[in-house]
Length: 555
Image 1 (tube, rainbow, N blue to C red):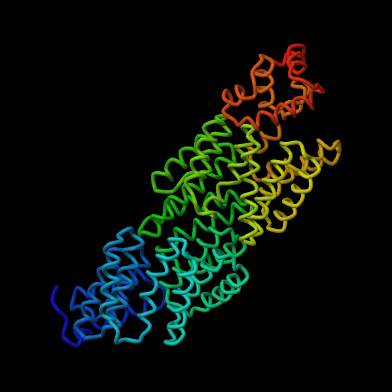
Image 2 (cartoon, rainbow, N blue to C red):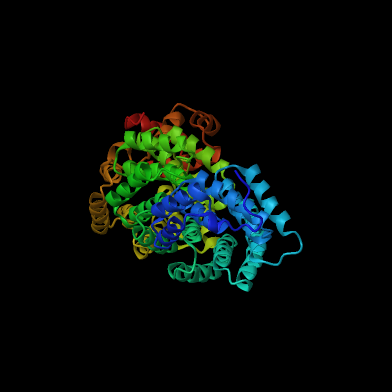
């Protein structure tokens, strides 16, 4: 590569017509033509650093990550040669930013160091703020939200002072992320609402606008801010739809659309968006990240529709692309009757995620699986943990998940009045969130609690409403669950499957410790089962319970 002139200006060397066309096409969002025209001028006579940066941004938006970095490296060299340290440092930052998100940490840190060295102590400029971004990413990645907030606040001040909208809103966006994780939800939501107005106004560059969209939706989803995730996704979708040549952010956009559609009950639309993300948008690191998410989303919908084999295939493929297939794969195993496998999977997954919000995403399924193996104590502990996280986050969605889990536990342990209260509260929240599938699940709990309380007519109405919703959605797994015989039928004398197992061991003279060891549950859980058995059979001793079991052929 030949060195540029000392002043960094190679504009006179460029093919003027191609450069002008390239600039115009870029401004109109026709990035493919911009890339072609600027590339032609570059090959013919070379581009100046401004136009090299423009060429790089076009490459980025087309998902051509290597060509993006190459153009910025050349622009960086030109700015260094022209003694334009801030511009060279800005290029160094964006090179490092790209490499960091492509998993090339040492090279990324090297470029960040180059940028800081160029600025030294003598420059007061916006680029100083850009080079705070690696710091706050490190802090937040280590769950040091206070330090992350301090860094974003300082960067936002720099961005405001130098009227750099891109820096200002990159910083304020991650300020909101830190505030959400610190439990300062009201402040965070106000910042997110303002940020959406700014993003939609066109005040940001296309590259930064795309980053802010995807970053915001991702962290809103991670902290269960579904209403904000929905608003931001609708805005991102409108932006992408108006830019048919967009590649870089379109895969993630489709995945986010799929999530919102599934949540709102449009499963067919969600499948279509997820498939499109997987099949059409494969270029660039952002789309590679989206691939695993798209496969998992397809797997979830197939699981709910009763397609266990297809769901498992998709979950495995998501795992191949680096996306954790839990809790979906464990719930497939549960539907297949392999409860012990499902329990082992989720025990491992929950233990593996010390971050409470990551754990919160697993806990509802964990409660379901623990109840399926009659480990109500563990399920109750997980339900309480979920409620504690929901309280700290002030999230309606988390609150609904926690209340639904609480209702399921209360129903299992026989506290039917409290179960009814919790299930109704969960149903009301799901209704306010316009989440039809989750609402139907809560109504099943309401119906079953009413059944145990002797109100058969109200129970039938709730279960019928849930069935209609499941059938409309195509939730075959849940319809089958309604049709399956439930614990409490006459031929088992009202005993659950686990209680029958305990009774069989008890009838053969086993102690609580021996039963616990045989069933791999705690002695405390065995004692609770024994008390429930006595109450349901109307007996007062282990001997009487054993005699009842032999007399009624429960063994």
